[in-house]
Length: 257
Image 1 (tube, rainbow, N blue to C red):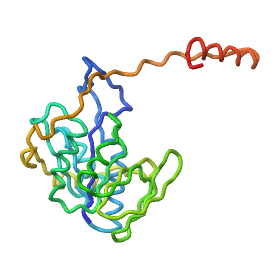
Image 2 (cartoon, one colour; image 1 turned 60 degrees about the vertical axis):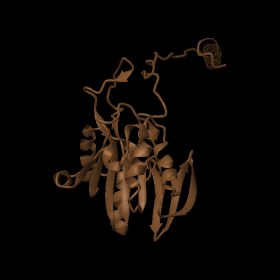
Image 3 (cartoon, rainbow, N blue to C red; image 1 turned 45 degrees about the horizontal axis):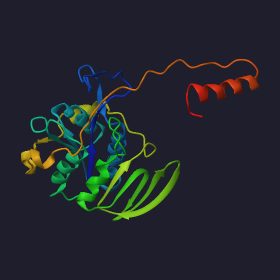
Image 4 (cartoon, rainbow, N blue to C red; image 1 turned 180 degrees about the horizontal axis):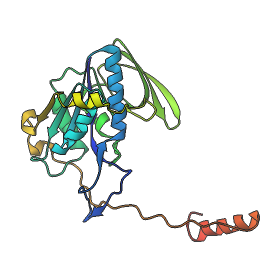
């Protein structure tokens, strides 16, 4: 079975992020595999171990994304593909990414495509479903369990605290949610092997695409950090007095009543 993972390089939100002139400062920032995509990589490896086949990880981005692709190879993926847009695109959006991935998958024999539920930098959750629509294959989002039996696939998905059970078929695209698995850490032998695994680099020309074909349909008008949290207030006195004060604060200061 041909198993693909679409993966994104994202900022590590556990680290401090600085914004200058409405742009995130990349110098000094830490970059990681999008955490939800790690669930996709892990599940792809599990599916290969159970059903055979090959795991290919695909990223649309700049040359710096090679590090995250090598990390996925160290986890156990077989091959990686970087679609390098550094020299061809100044800005892109979800339409751009989907258009590029559609061209990449056009001649591929797909068994299953796995992606993260959302990317933690933009959190649109659009790329997976939109790609499936363009490829004309079924898709299921926010999955927390998957069982493949021949062409039939049994899935459980998260629906805001409840579970929905879905039966579908291959070829298929799924987006992965926390709870699906526990992503493995790359081992030292895995890291050493990853250096020798194939990493193919493509450009738009290789996919018969022009810059105008993938021009973004949306524009980011502002990027800013959330306001710093103010110190909280500790209410004292009798419970009745605390309740009275709390209601007054919610009405007069927080303006939520």
